[in-house]
Amino acid sequence: MRKTVARLRFVKMHGLGNDYVYVDCFSQPKPDGSALARAVSPRRTSVGSDGVILILPSFTADCRMEMYNADGSRGEMCGNGIRCLGKYVFERGIARKNPLRVETDAGVKSLYFALNKNGAVEAVTVDMGEPVLDSRAIPVATDHWPVVQYPLQIGNHRYEITAVSMGNPHCVLFVEDVATSPVTELGPILERHPFFPNRVNVEFAQVLNRNSLRMRVWERGSGETHACGTGACASVVAAVLQGLGDRQMQVHLKGGVLDVEWREKDNRVYMTGPAEEVFEGELVWPPLE
Image 1 (spheres, rainbow, N blue to C red):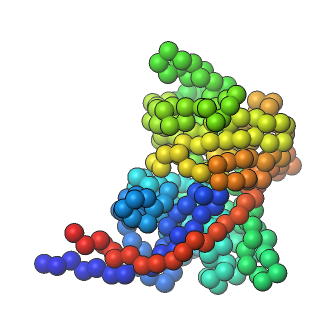
Image 2 (spheres, helix red, strand yellow):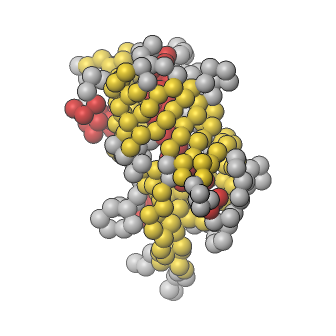
């Protein structure tokens, strides 16, 4: 029997080159996000992306975000992804609210839009919430916390890591030169190290001065990407905890710059950056065999 197929509408968006395929589930049925991510993420044979984000109705906020990495695994939170989702929801009139409240697997996040003279979203500030430093909640395989400059043995090398959750787990290493850091070699080893029971995102951060750092990231389930919003936030938190930077920093990534502030008065992290729409299209879904 021939299986039923349909046309699935999507929009490709990116935040500093961290790109996702977005599906509006307000106007069409929800697809299998994991299968869709595996199908559309390959860059030579499909749309090409770091994963898929589904835009859904919510009972507790203005909308809901479901995020899937390129390998089909579920992600709790995505900083660049949520900025793009906010731009889509606001500009398409799904919820013309400023601030906009978005339900994620890491809780409800508030988004604040900076609009240009035509009313389009130019930049988005996200209240990322309080950083999680409790080792059991990150999670990491130790009861010691906070996990700051923690010695982790890998082969013949001992690395000092700082572990932070921004709704998803992060492992931050400070390096002398991020350009020559072994991101593609060490990143996948750390991602699946037993010390991180839910796997981990790995940040290689180079402090430029008290107010700026440069960062490369190996993202859990997607590999090295051009930017990671939650990773930028985790790196700033780690820099403050290690006395390497101030609470307001610019984070320079492959795809551009994010502004991050860990406010002392409310212990919350705020991230500001752009969101861009690339193109829209249709997919045959499920794909024909």
